[in-house]
Length: 85
Image 1 (cartoon, helix red, strand yellow):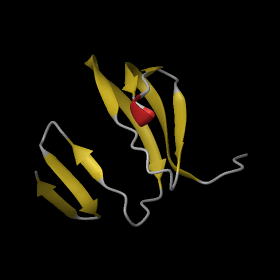
Image 2 (cartoon, one colour):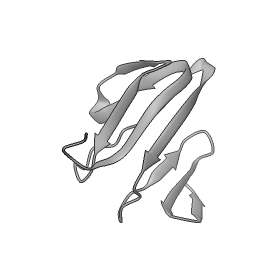
Image 3 (cartoon, helix red, strand yellow):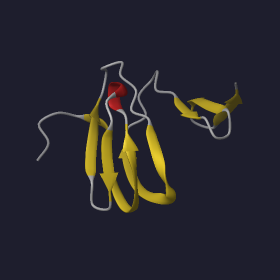
Image 4 (tube, rainbow, N blue to C red):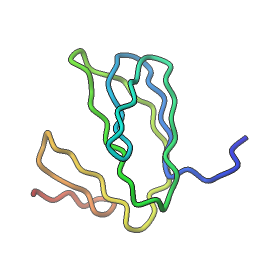
């Protein structure tokens, strides 16, 4: 049971990588789970390992959420909108 509403939660299905919530490195491997609380103003970037990573992520896209895709040099400020930077 969750006692707070997370903005997102993810489970690593396979592979490995590093989550960097607030700049702190947190290693991820198969079976790792984490959640990020909403309204903290802290981003939660994920670095995928050399052999890739499969994630199962869920979340509620709240107003003001922005997704950034550095490998494509784009960002999504809203559903259905992807812009270059």
